[in-house]
Image 1: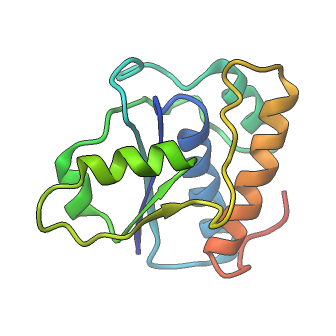
Image 2: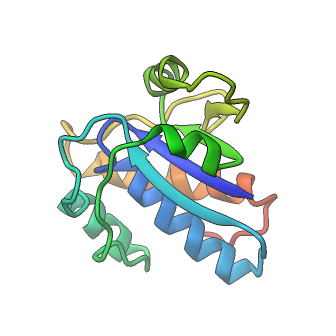
Amino acid sequence: MRVLFVDAGNYCRSPVAEIVARAMAVRSGAAGWSFSSAGLKDKHAGDSADPRSIAACAARGYDLTAFRCREITAADFAAHDLILAMDRDNAAQLEARRPAGSAVPVRLFLDDREVPDPYYGGDDGFGTMMSQIEEGVRQLLGGAGPGG
């Protein structure tokens, strides 16, 4: 199962989801999963993730320091089995960018609710984001992931 996490800039939420999913899959022995992330904008392409995301990950035992942001491409629709958007606007933009003939499912990461973008808020938003992403990854892996 090849999963792509997407948010606006690949700067806060989607990089965290990628790193958390990788770590939880390894820790739980969930074989056959691969994870990546991308953003809908090229604003941060090549940059590190948001320093607050890096710190929030480190506080929970995840290493986001080597991560580099990137923009989604048409090839991503063919290279993944599932694309998970962090919010409804991201999902709508993904559908608008969907290449003709692509049938890859695009859905919200948390099924019925969004992972709010903590970028413009305080540090507490990054803790909330971490909890939501850990919960979502556990659900994605079928409850196989460890607690955060």
